[in-house]
Image (tube, rainbow, N blue to C red; front, top):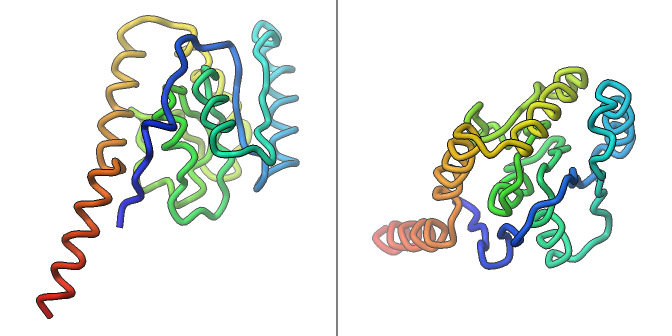
Amino acid sequence: MPYGIDTGVFKPAQTKREAIAYLPRKRPIEANYLRDSFRYAFPDLREWDWWPLVNESEANVAAAMGEAGVFLSLGRLESLGLTPLEAMACGCIVAGFTGIGGQEYASPANGFWAAEDDFPSCIKQLRAAVELAQSNALPRVAYHEACWATLANYSQAAFVDAVKRTWEAIVKH
């Protein structure tokens, strides 16, 4: 059953900021390590803000992701990996870990993914995401098109259709 992303809530803001949004809940130590390592490895990108989204409402998370240029996925042992999908809907360039469940949709076209617990790779992928966020070139357009193609599988319409087909199959038996 696909989850339906509410694109009325999760949507890009009018302007994007040089910020990396992330939810450190499942990887708080790793989040600090990645932030500090990223700043050390790439001093030219230290002006980028880091926004930890902790104990925030859905509306506040959506607003922050709508403004952030990049989303760092810190999923761990996820069944689906919902937050990166919501970040895609918010127009973020996504980098980080799939949390295993995100492997269902993760591809090189829709994110800068690192193997689970491969922190050096994650830092490199995060830099690539920041560079793409700073660009207005065709690769950025292709990235967003790939995200919307992915999100089509997780639309509210896809969810309603799947529920309908499931109940039709149940009722027939």
